[in-house]
Amino acid sequence: MTARILTAVLLSFAVIAMADEANLSRIAVIPVFSDAMENYDTEELKNAAEGIFLQSGRFEVVDASSHSDYQGLPDDQNLRLRAMAAELSIDVFMLLDVSSPNTEVSHGSADSLFVTRNTSVNVTGRFYTSEGSLLGSVKEKKYSGSLPGSTSVDLENLALQGVLLVTQRSLNEIFPYEFTFTVTGGPVFNIPIGTENGIDKGMIFSVVALSQGIPRSAEEYSHLSSHGILQITGSTENSGTGRLVAGKLVQGARVTAVENSTPGILAISYAILPTEVVPGDNLTGDEAETTRLVNQAEFTGGTCKWGFSLTGTLLSGTMPRMSSVGIRGEMGTRLPLASPSLALRVGVGFEACYLTQNTRADSISASANTATIAGTASADLEWMFSSRFGIHAGGIGRLGASADSWNVTDWMGYNRDALPGELYYAEIKQPPVSFSAGLTYMIY
Image (tube, rainbow, N blue to C red; front, side, top):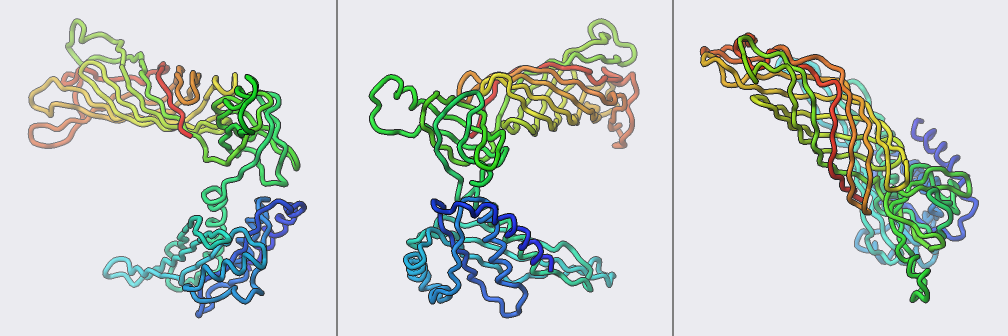
């Protein structure tokens, strides 16, 4: 029942996208699996895949089930596909394969009578041209999760979830969307197609100039320099808008946009953390200072589209007699200031660090260690001086507990808290603010 309702909803939404199919590729979905145990409703799974293709606005779905070559032996597959393509004007085939369910049984501990079962189903989509050439394949495995032995598994719903994932992935991996347009305006560019043709807000496209023969003027030469990454920032039924994430588009150029995955950014940075410390007992001179600078190297990876962003950072810091390693994860937004070269990234997240310092007593281990965690808020300016390379600078605020409890191992091998007289730093306070700068590299 769940499968039928979900399929009906997909097909009802897909009707909107069927208004203009004159220039759409024609695709046929053909189930190629046998289901002797009748675990699945083959027609429902086929309709679910067709609904995704219709909803995308990129395909016209062809029902080939009445054709004499719809079913047959695998050895004759290429001949059958060519025959159906010729008679029904089919451009692309999806051969849908769903495996028989596989169940793993777990009895828990040796003296337990409690039994659980975890059932899995493999779903594969293989895509062929009208000539029978393989374009590519997409595979997904869906699990029911561990269920008590008396609980039944909805195998059809499990297979349906796999079919939907395979079909959705194929739109990005096998059939990236492509369209052409003439560059007007900027930094926000008008796109002559919209949701009716499958263009949605947030989609990312690689853009390159479309050659129209040998350039005959300096203006036509400049048009050929158009290239970059474009993100759809708004979409109506028949039109949309986009903003460059990287590159440049020359006014009046004719360009081709091909769907791409989300661009990413890598950064290597140097950070300074002004840090307050409480020295250990009986220290004098430089070792008794209460303010230190932590020098930290940071390696960051993050998303690079406009809007919602995620970043992850590896940290490695040092100051006299102390070192640290850690991680930072943040989520936030990336805002265009002067698209595409200048952007502001703001975010909030957490930072966890493992700290190690030298000890002063021979009766304990040579190092003491502890861990800290803090909440973070950051702001970072990113400037791309080329299509891929750039620089960034910013600051991070922290709110967290101090490192005031250090673990050591004594001469008998027991772990205990270190005493202030055994340490160079009895306490290291979280730096409320730190500053960083470095180089960035965009991946697309």
